[in-house]
Image (tube, rainbow, N blue to C red; front, side, top):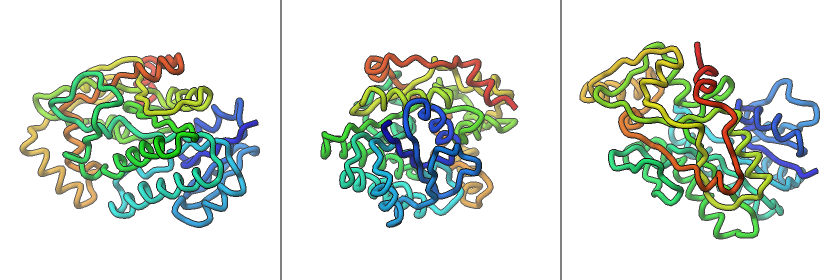
Length: 305
C-alpha cells in the first residue's frame, strides 16, 4: 500500500482525512500536538516542521505522498511566530519532499488568498491573482505558502504537486474562521452589504484531497461546494442573527479590540463581509468528476448551535 504522510494530522480536518484515507492507504502524520486515541495503525509523530526531527520522520517513514495542512490559521498568537511556522515550515517541508523521493504532494490552501475586493468577478478561476495581502496583511503568510507551492510545481515537475483552494469550510470538527464567526449569537455584518458566499462541508474537503491523490493531480485547483447564498442567509440558517454595523465605526473598533486580544479577527477580515469571493470549481470537477456529497442545508446543520 502507498504511504501518505499528513501534516496537521491531529486537527479536525486531519482526523477526518486520516479516516477517509485508511480505506486505501497506509497513513502516518505529524503535528505539534498529540492525537489522543488515534487509530492503532496510524503512526503520529509530535514534531515541529521546522526542526531536524521532522526531517528524520520523512527519512524514516519514506512516504509516497504528503498532504500538507499543518498551518496556523488563527490569530491568537504572535504574528511573527505564525509567519515562521507557516512559511518556514512549508519551505522545510518542500525541501524534504525534493530530497527524500516524495512522489506526490497536496497543499491545502484557501479561497481567502484571492482577497475580497469590490472589483472581484463572480466565479474566479485559478489564474486570478492572489491579492489578499493588499487589504489583509495578517494573512500574507498563507499567500506566501501558496506561492511557494506554486513555484515548487515548476521547479520539480516530476513530483505531482497539487494546490487546493477550498471555499469556506464548515463542519462539526473543523475550527475555521468562518465557522467561529457563524457560531456567534449576533454576527456583526457591514451595514449595506450582503455578499454571496460559498461553503463546503469538512467531509467534502477530505473527499477532494482523496480524489486529488487518487488521480495524481498536478497544478492549482479551486474546490467548491454545492452553491452560494448571501451572508445573511448563512447566519440565519446556522441559528444566529445579523448585527449590522456602520463600517466607519466598526473598522476602528474591531482594530482596537483585535490589538487588545478581545476580538479574534483583524480589521482586514471585514472586507470578506462586504465583497464576494466566489470561485469557479470547474477545473477540479473536470479532472476528478468530483461532486459534493453534502448540500447547503446539511452544511449549515453541522454548525447549528
